[in-house]
Length: 194
Image (tube, rainbow, N blue to C red):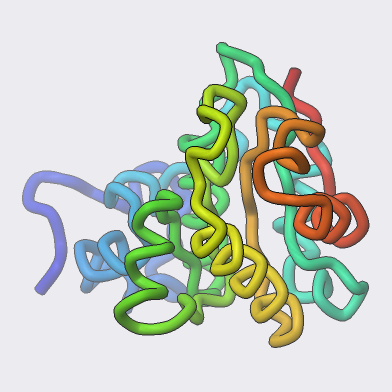
């Protein structure tokens, strides 16, 4: 059994026994599969002080996103006070509570997983370090860029959502190429974070 001793996951009122009993019975499994800590599963997205309406609307209409031609959501900008990993963890937890398989993975984890198993098939894949301005020019090999293009296009074609963080879209275009930048600009819901 994957429950956590001494913790009442229903205390926050985010989880409901009649709905989330199976989830609570195996909290550790669901947290590990999602790539988050178990407490995120009973923490509301609305606990974030800097949560935007765009994020809430994206999650509440998640099942319709691909039908509306959206490939995912992109956080763009550099606000040192915004914890993107926390935001993505809470988004993933909200999806799991609604029986949607989500996963938070770093970019190196995604690339390693793709090498060993093919692209992740979670309905929602969240990559908090997809691109950040501190990359050195040439830091990402052409092979890895090719993998990223394949990842984003494959997920889009299969109706799977990808949530990513990009500190600067112009720099992303320089480092990863215009093709990825255009795909993101055209097909992702955008949240400006600074």
